[in-house]
Image 1 (cartoon, protein in one colour):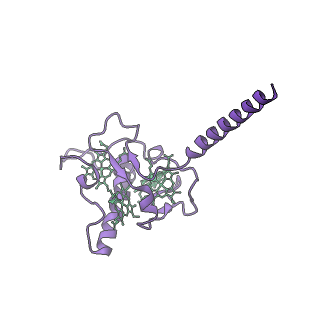
Image 2: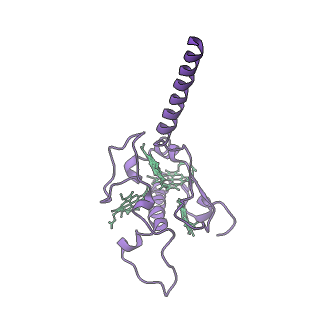
Image 3: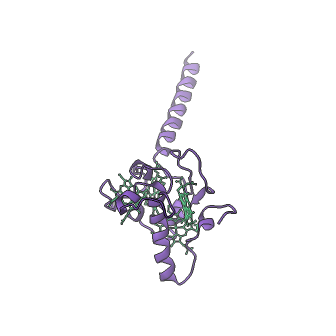
Amino acid sequence: MGKKYLLLMVIAGLATLFVVAAINAGTAVPDVVKMENKAYEKHTKGIVEFTHKKHATDYKATCGDCHHNDKGEALKELKEGDNVQGCIECHKKPGEKAKGKDAPKLSKKEELEYHAEAVHENCKGCHKEANKKAGNKNAPETCTKCHPGKDK
Ligand code: HEC
Ligand code: HEC
Ligand code: HEC
Ligand code: HEC
């Protein structure tokens, strides 16, 4: 009786450990983030594999270069393990703005409501500057270098 009880306790203890580990993992970011936001009904371009960890380490980008608060102010104090809101929570409209000559002229603020516009501005903006500084093209600026696939 005593032995069986002890065994049960050990099992229960292990189970608890696993659950706690799973909860903690919830706030961690994968090293490579599959940029396939669920707010999109359908992605028209290949899914971008974003090397989150490499950006924050090898490429020396700081958390605040990409993450900001509800006023758009850089989250400079952010550190690993902190919770972060997804871009879509504020840049709410999935997709890019309408393009072409009949498309309505948008203010910068209206444009940034579109998720893909905000994300593109963040990624490509830094890439352009980084390439200029480094004198190379290591940071992708063209569609297919980020979106795998054959179009464009
Ligand atoms: C080069 C840009 C960039 C840098 C630098 C960066 N992040 Fe991120 N991070 C992102 C993007 C993009 C996502 C995906 C968000 C989305 O899909 O809405 C993300 C996702 C996350 C998530 C997961 C959010 C979720 O969906 O639950 C966390 C947590 C996070 N980042 C924390 C950090 C911390 C801490 C740092 C600094 C050590 C950091 N990030 C640096 C761009 C960046
Ligand atoms: C909590 C809300 C919130 C979240 C989450 C958020 N943003 Fe923003 N973002 C804003 C606000 C507010 C502004 C300022 C808009 C303005 O000036 O009209 C802004 C501005 C921007 C700008 C323009 C910056 C500039 O200097 O003009 C870019 C690019 C951008 N966000 C990209 C992102 C990306 C990429 C993510 C996810 C990693 C993200 N945002 C997450 C609220 C947010
Ligand atoms: C603050 C600057 C900065 C931001 C913001 C940034 N990047 Fe980069 N990224 C870089 C630099 C610098 C390189 C090139 C590193 C090198 O020299 O190889 C790079 C390289 C890349 C590469 C090619 C190498 C690899 O690791 O896959 C991809 C793809 C990429 N970035 C995607 C993104 C995406 C997607 C975003 C937006 C969610 C983004 N980046 C935002 C700085 C940035
Ligand atoms: C630096 C990397 C990068 C470059 C370069 C880039 N994109 Fe993106 N794009 C992204 C990321 C990241 C997303 C967000 C996807 C998500 O979170 O679901 C995105 C989203 C999109 C979306 C909305 C999602 C979809 O699949 O329908 C479209 C459309 C798009 N991009 C088109 C383009 C086109 C066209 C070009 C070239 C003119 C381009 N992108 C260049 C990284 C990039």
